[in-house]
Picture: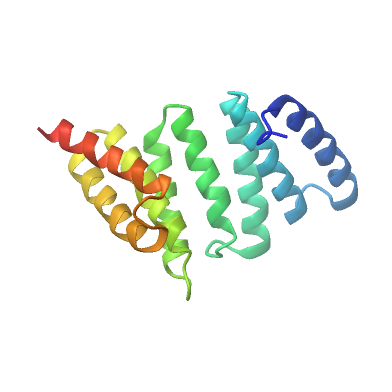
Amino acid sequence: YTQLGNPDLAKMILERALEINLKHFGPNNVQIAWTLDNLGCALRDLGEMRQAQVLHARALENYQAEYGLEHKMLAQTIDLLAHTYRGLGNPAAAKPLYSRVLVLLEREVEPDLAHVAITYNNLGNAARELGDVDEAKQLYQNAFGIGRKHLGESHAEIGRTLNNLGLAHLELG
């Protein structure tokens, strides 16, 4: 429902799902982590960033308990948590999370290179927000190189990356 433009309804449904799933699975289960992440996304869409951050962090704890600290299943939740920190105005907390996502993605035998490119772009945004425009520029260039090859020249993500790269050049003078 969030993608259909009704995050309030999505929140209500996901809160009910969480209640039911907690009764069936207990608090420390992958199914709970999945529901926590989805509810966190609905809360982010509603601007409830602090609550979303708490839910994504709880989801990450559940995934780590199930899969360990280095499993690819953690990447999406870490990415969501990083976005939430940036939404809270805390790029310093987001940046190492994006770096961790890159490590998890890039070590795969067949990495999702589109996600790698997007993560480089997000990491560049965090670096730029922290004032490290030179680093951001390099990260955007990495995102562009990978993205162009795996998403195509006219993909929307390429447009976002080029926009960010242009802003970095403006800031560098």
